[in-house]
Image (tube, rainbow, N blue to C red; front, top):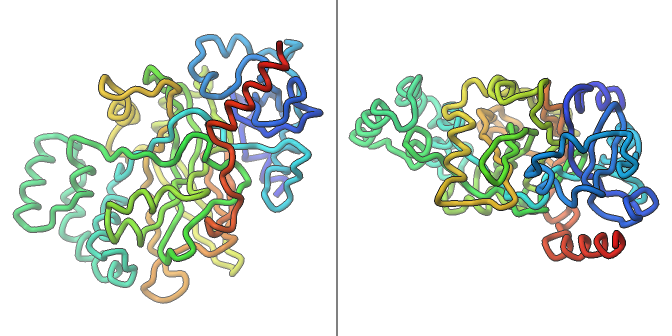
Length: 397
């Protein structure tokens, strides 16, 4: 995957920041742990002298002024190529630097049902009660009844209200239609601060889930004032059988060990990359199984039903604040129906599936699938970060 890495992981232009686990001999003040880094011209630089977290960096007004390779306090960690290669879980050497998810102290939020295709699949899941075989039978019926009705509907508009009343009369209203075309978007907490996995890591699904899939998404980087300042890629791993049985199982369907992948890095807005690029982004997905199975699909942000700005406003406002900022999964139109194991059973993951999520201006996120109980436990949380920060502070003084 060497050529794949260097040509597609990140572009040569732009401002890229994130996190690396750095061993003591290469780390700022020789303190091993998660360091804030900057990638510039195929080199990775340690920004720990200035920032203890990316949550602090994204809320800084002057971080762009600090990014200077001639600054003696900004030191080289290694080449981008060597750190990317060492980030693959199956060949990782913990004594060398490797990438982590770029987010840390920020809240991890997500919006669902923001594309018509995925909205229809959620309605089908609900009606099928999490049974993939029943979903096959319902798909054509549900699509024919409500599919065309949703075209060009603006969520929360008078037309959406009229459609809601019509569908209720026909007995096919759904909680997913409510958040899909109603005034309030679906907003949920995807995972906890520090729990996301990054480039090259394993992602986790529950071993008893028989119907699950990746959800490739654009992820916004948002400050504590609600300003969108960058973006990255994410995999909102989802258990369709759990959520289909009951929306009250959303927490179990969405938040497990390794169920949130983010990366490879934050690309911050500058003259070469803006919110307009996010709005026109294409996100591609490739799943490759050890059984020879391959699935390719794509998602187009131009088809999203609510703008990124509107989604952000529904997350942060006078009613809810995020002191460290947050990252926001924007939703996906990907909902695979291709049979894999048996006829009419649809798609589901198998252990060691390789999942590649790409977008031309945001690079590539690569992960492998395994059971949530078989991948490394999440063991670095708030207390560990406080201890780590105190060690750095004591060494600095």
